[in-house]
Length: 245
Image 1 (spheres, rainbow, N blue to C red):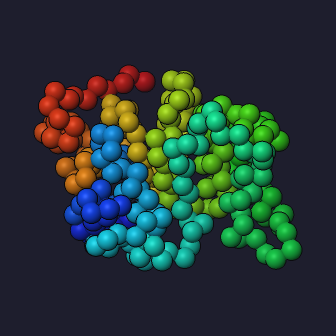
Image 2 (cartoon, rainbow, N blue to C red):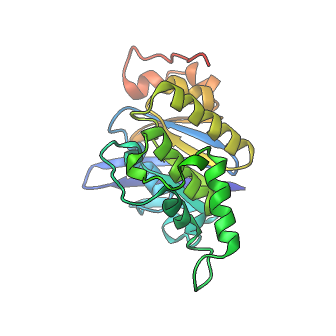
């Protein structure tokens, strides 16, 4: 079953389209890396995918339903780019943020024992069990991204959408982060990731979509590096540098 379906999608904030005539499907359990130059429409496309924007034309479906009308919001975990920002001084603890993922599941009257177990399991799953009582604003960028992934896991999300989540994160934390994504994807979680480092995303993702307003490529990472899509989308002289891990 397709987790995401985009059919001839066009969207603009004014008269000029930001995303134009994009069609692609993402199967449930896929790990899609979305790449493209700055200003190419990647974040806009991700927002269309999860229903935060409505296309001017075309259709976006999440698990078979129109994305902007999707009623099961808890199935979608969204980690925006500014999560890792050092200016993010959220005056709440890690556990309080992760609890937010349980709101759609809890009964009236407060959190159940099942809710508490889910929150604790999610925090432990992403490797920040020792930080549960710490304020999110005091965490590093790498730790903060894990908090929001834990919130998605506590909510029993089926799709994780991440917008350049490793910006400002050190190399060691970034590698640990990708190991976590692989484990979650192996367990069946569908992932859509915007990443500025093309070498990293072609190493880790199972599918690549290359965007610069229109879609230049969608398919296997190995096939992507053999095509002209990178040069066409970014301009001449571009090549992929793979990272050794």
